[in-house]
Amino acid sequence: MLTASLGAAPAYAADFPSWTDVQAAKRDEASAKAELARLTAAISTAQVEVDSTQKEAEARGNEFNAAQQAYDEQVLVAQKVEEQRAAAQAVADKAKADSTRLISKLAKQGGGGDLTVNLLGDTGGADSYLYRIGAMQKVSERSDALWANAVQAQNVAKSLAAQEEVEKNKLEQLRQDAEAKQKVAQAAAEAAAQRLADLEAAQAKAASLTAFLTGQREQTEADYLEGLRQKWGSGAGGEVSPSGWARPAAGYISSNFGQRYHPIYHRWQLHTGVDLAGPGCGIPIYAAHAGVVTYAGWNGDLGNFIQIDHRDGTSSGYGHIMPGGIGVSIGQEVAPGQPIARVGTTGGSTGCHLHFIIRVNGQLTDPVPFMRNQGITLG
Image (cartoon, rainbow, N blue to C red; front, top):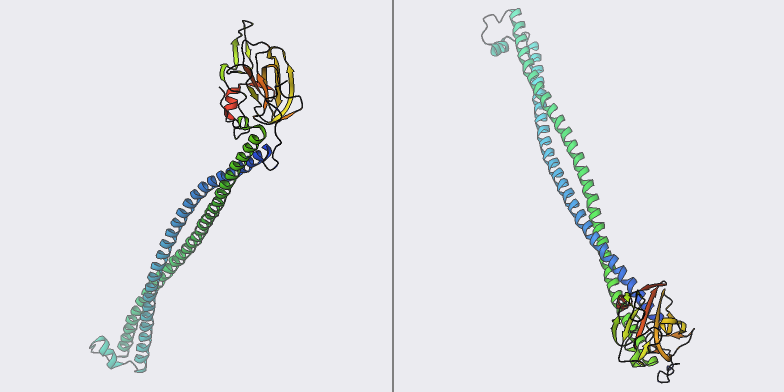
């Protein structure tokens, strides 16, 4: 078994956060960051909508202004034509009245000799009844012609006035339609601007919350690592990353993961882990991550071997442990960075080193990039 120098760990201070607390803090921070990212993306989309709806509102506003101006101008035209129609109506009414009065006056004068002479000139036969009748007829015809011309002018003016009124009504409808569209576009622009403002306010709150949770996560990690140092000593805790993983042993990489030519069996075969060779046999081996020991004993070519299940689909293995160097037992809970064994050269080994194995969902994986992703550099 492991020598007494690894000893029993001191009692863990209950007021320090656990690895579960660290993970919860990370989840909270990640959730806040995701929400912040969502809001940031939504703001970009909302800004595009604001720009689009504002342009639409401006375009509809210009259309409404043009329609209003066209309507106002048409109102003035219609008013002038109406004034012309009224004037033509007055002329026609006066011509009709004058004609009626003239004929009535001639009739009352019994032929109207003097008046007829004044109107038609010196006829030389004003005392003739037939001549008087003819004179009255000519006066009546002239009067009727004047009235007819006045009525024609009135009708033309009336027709123009009616046309201009139709045009005015059409422009009024266009103006109303343009105004309605402008109001809809303006309402859409205002709604888009309000949505953007709401998103920006939410983003500010999310940014503040994210900053708070980031600080909380950093403090939780720091307190967790301090708890590890107090529990296992500074030599172990100092090697634990914020991810909760630790360097399993000191030393350089003497053999990588993958196919290699075996130095003992002299054949090509899979090297299931990475070899860390240090100053020699007896240096400490640390648990790479928190978990439960599922194997602790002899394992053929791996010699004395420990396997730890990390309860997240991953497991780690430690081979070639020195005789008597296993310091944990099956079922024992271990923390990241906790001393569990000492480096040796048992099994199929040519020198003192740790054969370090990582499995993900039961499948072997290269420990070097895996540990790098956990914030740990091997070798």
